[in-house]
Amino acid sequence: MYDLMIIGSGPAGISAALTAKARNLNFIWFGSRALSTKIEKAEKIMNYPGLPAVTGSEMQSVFLKQIDDCGITITESQVNSIYDCGGYFAAGADNEIYEAKAVIMTVGMTTTREIEGEARLLGCGVSYCATCDGALYKNKDIAVICASPKFEDEVTFLAGLANHIYLFTPYKETTLQYDNITHFNGLPASVDGDKKVASVTFKGEAIPVSGAFFLKDSINPGVLLSGLDMAGGHIIVDRTQMTNIDGVYAAGDCTGRPYQYAKAVGEGNVAVHSVLEYLKEHKDN
Image 1: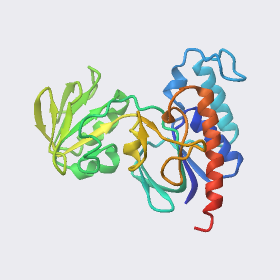
Image 2: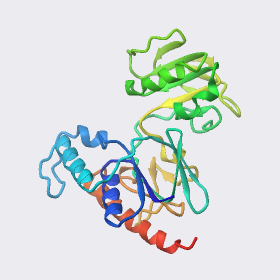
Image 3: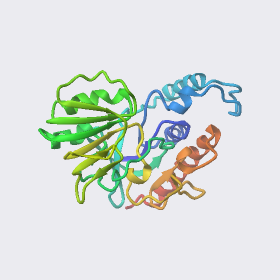
Image 4: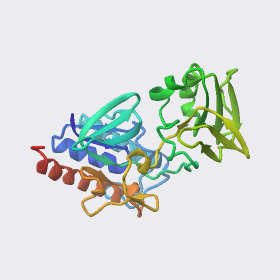
């Protein structure tokens, strides 16, 4: 079991990982070598100490060099769920389960609109992981809401299992050419069902399905970890970056404004120091 899992590889996650490494914590860091879209696409950052008038790509290169020089590994798996197991936490990522004594969420801001019924039916036909849950829908009709072409490999995987896929995308063109895929340009208004998914509604029409897969970059933190206190789309934290769940901390844009790199880096550092205190207090548990 790890001491700590860090989820997210923006500035807050980078800061948390560097601090955790410096303090010799046994940790796992989930994210991407691209770090974050916000960093990658930034035109120019004027107020980051030590890096005046730096572009996003330049900052990305500096961060990656420091990460590599410190021997830190980024686990490039998307965390789809976190469970409070009473004294430790379990995270599901790409059909694997990872356990840690504490969690730091640096997941940024969720930009993808949540569809009605998505959160309510999570685990009852709604899934965020094709690899984890695809086999449950073998020879069944399913809906797939795919946020980006980069997730189309997962759609291909599901096409090999499902009877028929109703594919919904916010983009017009897709390279997927399968007899059992019907493509709609647009997103369904809702996922419907009482105790489990029964249909999706698109342009006023109910399409019967047994499940709905959402393939996207980020998941609402309140959906990722049940019971997490949120306000205005942000995770509520105190000055130590602690959430309402003992052992869970959050840092960066996901905790609220200002959405600044310097603020995120500071919060990531504070969160790790708070984790150190938490682990010290619970070392005999």
